[in-house]
Image (cartoon, rainbow, N blue to C red; front, side):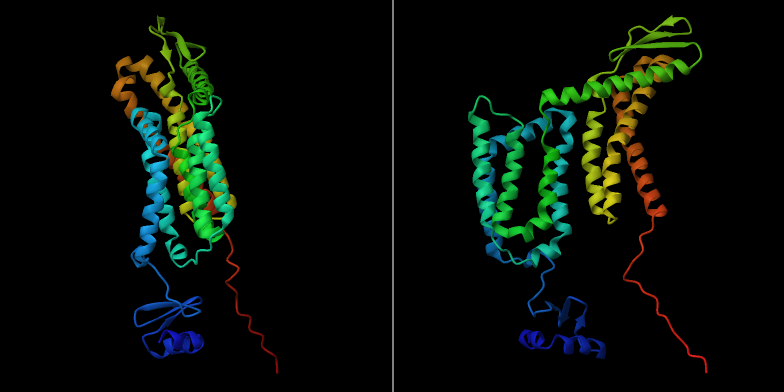
Amino acid sequence: MAAQMKDDHNLICESSQTGTDCKCDKKHFSCQGTAFSGDGTSVRSSWNELPVHSYVKIAIIGGLFVYLFYGEIESIVGQWITDSSWSHGFLIPLFSLYFIDQAKGEILNLRPRPNYLGLLFMILGILFYFFNVVSPSGYGYFRPTSMIAILGAIVLFLGGWGLIKYTWLPITYLVFAVPLPTRYYFSLTMPMQRLAAQVTAFLLNIVSGMRAEVNGVVISGEYLGQKLDPPLNVAEACSGMRLLMAFLALGVAMAYLHYRPVWQRIVLLASTIPIAIFCNIVRVTTTGFIYIMVNPKYAQGIYHDMLGLAMLPLAFGLYGLLAWFMSSLFVEQDESITEDVVIRRQK
């Protein structure tokens, strides 16, 4: 039956309009519960339809990959557990798998064409990884990132550029799960701490009877003649780096999952940084007012953590508002929709 369908695709499409079991669209047709492409080959729509040898191949390659980089993977996961700034790392691989599942229709029906350029990249990547392991001048951050690059090279080698087309983002997305080196992490957090402290002090000075000044990341001053003791310290946890990294990763996911023009995706992605910084300033400022005008105990411990969690809905609300604004203000015209023009000749 499949051979007959392959010989006369147009006839099958016409038969679908006469009440038979066949259904047809632009690229695929199905008869008696089996879907076929335009050339008569069956179309897969579920991961369960992959042959067993494909799963065996994936298991072997995945096992070798984990065995080779077990120490690196264990170190990264350990930092997710011990450092709350990187606890979002557990979600990153799940998002990557979800991205892949969204393109399963294309991936399952792709004809793999191995590319030996991927083999070359894989060998170079492995050599570069071990150079950073054994060399005293090796750079620690290049080890996990080169591991991700090697994963991309393996996909290129086995599936070719066609498979890379649908997996490059899920693979690259794993970079968000790699903790930044301590030196660079602190070099980024310190300016954010100072910015939050300066804005908070400026807003505190607006309040009548309050005088605040900043020394680095420490806010000191007095309220109604009573000196602020001890001064308010904008600690590393209040830098907003944790919110920034998590929100940046989720911003990429949201920009990818919701179909919209490329320029809108770029704007949404770029907006994650100022939104995260703004929300952290709101957090620090609110903490400052609570610390001075209410009670210092409500600006510490569990109350401080709850206020930090409250910034996530605010950040996503601003992000969603921006997305809604662009979608409402700029309406993309569908060029595929054409109007029928009827010309009548006057008699």
